[in-house]
Length: 488
Ligand code: NAP
Image (tube, rainbow, N blue to C red; front, side, top):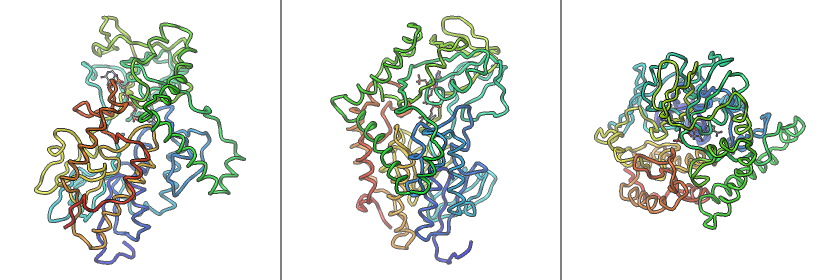
């Protein structure tokens, strides 16, 4: 590659979503050019490139769902559709010249730490070696196929929202949707007018809050003003993020419960607008708002009140060739089943086989639950950094901001290796244990442990996310305390 010196340390980034692109940009800015990014898709964007289900958009205000160093106002609505986020990712990649560093359609299947270097292997048998590896693999990657008896017996079309088949024609079809998370609340309103009937199989009702200020189209004149005033754009984005931060922290730490009560009030107002009392009751959650990730939608309840919509709360017994058998014994005949059942959020970089010092397999290190020191490094896995790893804040806040803080933090550690001050860096196991104990003490008091099932919970039923405020996480990501790390 142009301009490389023989002593330049080699860096491999896995994933060219927001996190991977953010890492590459910051490394290039710091003068490190010996970078290769491996990306399994044919384009940048990560989960935004993969996900194609109808109605997909982002519930973080679009202007704030951008890199802090590359704010954009090129979004048609306050909350942007996915196509505009994909376009933003492509624009960033082009502007920062990332594509020459990216190996597209290359998936890493193995990463082994041998003789102070990472040896990586792609699924098509290529090998590469690096001094530093950054796992920017995201959490919305491995679709969760529910463990429902007979799932694959279904003779109609079965599709997971995370692996959407764009040739699938829903027009006039009897469609079943399983799952009631953020994905479902975007999908259902987008398809309800096309399908003959839609049956939503709900296991747990969700708190659905109206967007603050709705989702208006952004007038071209307003965009034009922002285009010519980057400072105003930054200020606007910062204000939006501050508002979300207050909300997230309010739900989490406001012991008076005022924020939670305010959100619940807004949700209750919308629930009260549902005319059919039976439907209203079925859609009313029986746990605290915020226990699961809050859902924002103006259009979900109206969609569920259309004549061709049906909410099914009798549990699913099994799936048969022509539809869904309920626990009540009733049968629901369907042409298409859509799984809006989310992701295996606790897989992180797996199914990749990662072996650290002495060949220890990450699956074994994490056998009792996933952990990472401050969300970014794992003891026994030197020179390997994770973006949005275990214990990262993964709530209603913008994950792009969080990724940027993590990148800013761990690149200070990586720099010690890149500038030759150390050959390896990894967390001291004692510091990681202390960090883990602090989290364990704090998590039982959080809203996520208040009595609901959610993807925040790990295999031990404990929330695997940062249990403090957004502000406290941001502060913890300013400067690493090198005493928490072993440098060799
Ligand atoms: P999700 O939030 O994990 O929800 C999965 C749904 O599937 C839940 O309703 C769950 O029911 C249900 N489910 C799972 N297994 C089931 C089974 N065996 N039988 C019946 N129901 C089952 O998934 P998601 O909505 O796809 O969201 C995934 C992630 O993407 C989340 O982080 C979400 O925030 C994110 N997302 C973000 C946006 C955005 O705008 N920022 C948009 C879409 C998605 P229970 O509740 O009973 O477990």
